[in-house]
Length: 447
Image (cartoon, rainbow, N blue to C red):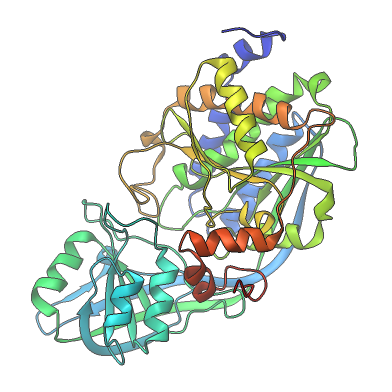
């Protein structure tokens, strides 16, 4: 490996425990659901951790639609599933839905087109088959069920282990979903499919809604330039788990990067702003708030950490921005370390509100086996699944990436939002973005 810069910071990063100590703080808080006291405590802890390495650490609070989980059940003629077996999906409305159960398997869009779900309770898996060319998000399946007139929605995990999956419903315009929605384990879903498919079932949810407060944590390093590179993550997590992978590790990575970059501040030629968003899991609310208020011309690039440390090899969506891809390749070559790059769109994290505005943004995560979230969004998202060495190795690469992107005069051309929309259409994402309300404006007419 040839490297022409000082390397002391690399050794310091390999013996640092700043990031790992912070992830331990976060998981020990417990419930970090958006708008909860735990999310507030996590934001305060993250502000204090960033203040040790960066300037102007602060919390920007904002109001959100609050939601708290109550009891839920799926009742058939044979049995009632409740307790840990059935959990309401966040922002499900309270209610009771009774109808014939229809098992739509993977819940692909074309399956909904061919199915009659009017008045029925739809069950769909949490993943797609290996041969399918894109991910179909949970909310896309839910809103296809809603548009088809379904009475209720059952989201079945594809991961073994009696783990009911969580994940929000709702849209930006209607934050509380239209029909009761629950998550069930793979095993409960298999039992329902075997014993109740085509029979009447009742889905019941008891949820509390009201006003709540979330917040974005900010801090800065480097010169006070008008232009900035954003290094981001999200603080909140679902209430059923520690949220170690999703996304304690991402926020801990931001803290570790602040520590590493503070020791390289002389190398930073454009302002680096750290932003740890609140309320990501319920509609990217914190990042939408920031993207709506920041001058888009002032943001050179966004490096969003969501799902890092789950594996040893870094992975990243680069959203059709060739200079972002080139920056990763320079870092990978410098350190002789693999980085798995995907040039296509990945709309489901806090980089997305910037990408839709044409701002170069990357979603950094880790390469893992299989499709879907794995342990994520279940009670098994715990710290023991992660390794501190993966955090340190990834922090070295990402610190170098941020310095590279912050070079004076580094040209990172923007893309027109219509180009992003055209990519979404070509990659078969447009319908999902439409049905879930995840495009910020009416989707462009590309005819």
